[in-house]
Image 1 (tube, rainbow, N blue to C red):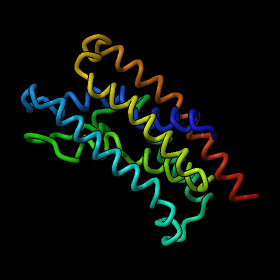
Image 2 (cartoon, rainbow, N blue to C red):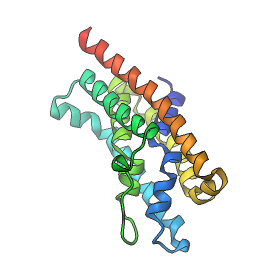
Image 3 (cartoon, rainbow, N blue to C red):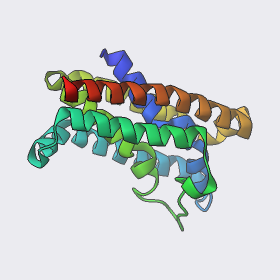
Image 4 (cartoon, one colour):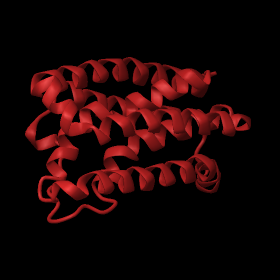
Amino acid sequence: MTIVSAAVLLFLVMDPLGNIPFFISALRNVEPARRTRIVLRELLIALAILVVFLFLGRNLLNVLGISEPALTLSGGVILFLISVRMIFPTPESSMREETPGEPFVVPLAIPYVAGPSALATLLVITSREPDRLLEWLAALVGAWAVSSVILLTAGRLSRWLGQKGVIALERLMGMILVAIAIQMLLTGIKAALG
């Protein structure tokens, strides 16, 4: 996997376009003058969590005794479930959370940006080639930076794309993630059997 392909994968998993409605909804009770600062703070918290997980996640797996095939399979399952929810959302399975007042860490940083699929993807990437941590860090920061630009301009993008445009992009990203999840499952099965 190259830095660019890892960055694209992480960008798709972070799903900033799909998170636009969630960010707008979570910030509707916050005065407009503070929204940009809150989003920036939450994005920085999410980046810190992702970076810590990037460097310490492998140690956690070793302590728990989780093998690489098990990690790849579980990451594929999580990614598959999330991508199916992106393609076929239902009100019951919505990740939207009601937050009274100003959100802090939850739900914007976790789970919207640094969610289970992003953390699992980081673990899978680093477990395959742990000697390339600085390259994975570059990929993570690149994906986070592009996601941040999108989420910081969420209000304008939402007005420009319209609700149907945002939904269409989220469905497209979900379909791409399904293919990635299936590939992760096949890789995990092959590693477990081989």
